[in-house]
Image 1: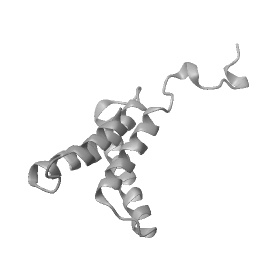
Image 2: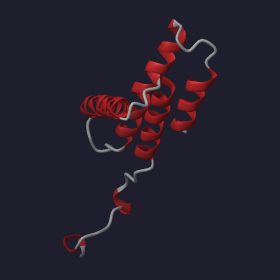
Image 3: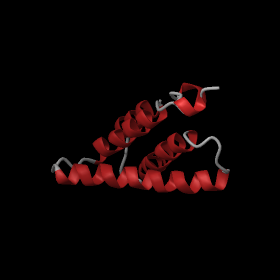
Image 4: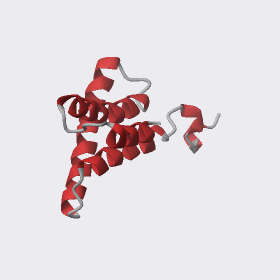
Length: 108
């Protein structure tokens, strides 16, 4: 879902570099990873989960930008799509305790 939102924002904004377009792009690039990381922290207090998720979103954005600059493949549209894909992959990580493998210590 977030990857499709990133593609839609990157491709379909008529004037992506106007103020409105930049606002949508920045809000997506920050919110998509933030929401995906908050989902992975169900037992944590809301304020702490928001702080950790904001830091994680910043790290994802920096890593995408650094990877694109290192490979000399900088493109703002591709960056938005890459952040969306990273958020979508984070969203696919299971977060309930029943899906995690049990160890010997968990056995009754």
